[in-house]
Length: 171
Image (cartoon, rainbow, N blue to C red; front, side, top):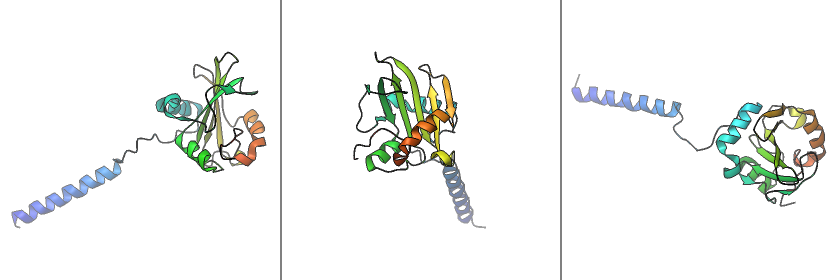
C-alpha cells in the first residue's frame, strides 16, 4: 500500500477520534452551571458557586431591603437567576424549569434572619407547580427543604403567577 494513502487513513482516523472526544466531553462551555439536584445542599452549594448576591439580578421592580411582610420579614431582598429574570421580564408563567428565586429575609434593623428559595424543577411536584422549597439560616444551615407544607399552602394563593407573590413589573 502506498505510504501517502496509509498516512491519509491515519490522519482521517485521528481527526475522527479527536472529534468524538471533543463532542463527548462537551467542549462548548456556555459558562453556566447546570441545574442542581433538588436537594437543599445541592441548591445551596449552587447558589454559593454562582455567588448569587453579586452575579444575579434583583427581582425586576424591587430594590434591596424593601419593606416586607410576614412570614418573610420586615425587609426583603430578592435575587433571581437568568431563567427567572427572563420569565419575569416577559411575563411568562408558569416559570420555566431551572428558575431560581432567592429571598433574603431581614429583621427591621436589616439583620439577615433567613434565606428562602424557590427552585423550579420539572416533574418534582406537579401538584404544587414543581417548586422545590428551601429555607436556610444566615450561616447556610438548612432549616427546611423540599415539599414544605407551609410554603405550598401560602403560595397557592398566588397561583395566577405560579406561586410568586412579588408583582411583575409589566402587570
